[in-house]
Image (cartoon, rainbow, N blue to C red):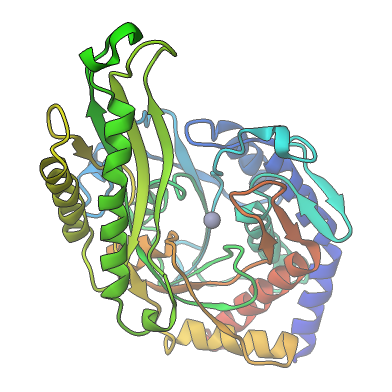
Length: 421
Ligand SMILES: [Zn+2]
């Protein structure tokens, strides 16, 4: 390792406390869908404090909706944006992007948490809170890595863009908006909390909603009504059957996994009164599928599965309504031979003395937008977190230090490899 690399790594140790402070500041802003403003403002404040230029990239840009990779959504877009810090945008040479998402998933019901999920706390080497792992620590590490490089006196001469985006947990439209505005770059690193492993591929994901209408009636004669909640539950086996089919069709590299493509019915809502036959039921869910399948084909199969079940089970009423909002994302495999991935492997070896493991994912990340919308190679590599999307989510502090160093070293070497010294 060169002297200046050692200097940069020493600087990473110096800025670890600030990195934890930024992570905690972000966790305090409970940035669930539609409520990202606080986290965005905190992030913007940090960019300014670190002397990084910051630009807002709005999600309600009308031309974004025309992008073929844009996922239709049914929630408001006004006043919602990503933040981009572009260094040396006019410089020639390969453009490096560090990208992370500021949005988190809901933590309710919160009474099962040790402390409120938006009040970060540290205990025995872990930092706790909703989004601490997924992925506010990763964002803090990637931003502070850039700061550490600069603090160590290494000039950044190449185009480098830091992106902190929203809607990673529901549509992928945040990252897409950055790419749509020309910030796709030539290689992207995303510090998702899957540990110090090279992310080697991800599943496709489609989000869906099914609505069943029944007939309301007084419970003195339930047979006068049609119970939408009961009807909805009778559709579940058809969805499980589709899930089983998608898993049965799996090909390498997913063939070594027992059940990579998961169905999740994540919301169930229906009825309006304890003593009225429920007149409506709605579920929202997501289903994963292989990189070979297209989102459109899986959406079609899901509609047919629900319609067929309605007929075969002779369910009452009109056929259930199926619609799609949010994720309709292709899966893909990471190009493990790309120069950026090889460089990351080298940085991992330099820091740990070992080869990096690979990690094949059953979910999706914003890597998808870079891959499909811009043909940009990239991977995920980040801190170690536990119970993401769960109770008492936490991120390992030493793994944040490692992420900080890996991103800083990567940035130094990326620039050294491609720019004449
Ligand atoms: Zn994430």
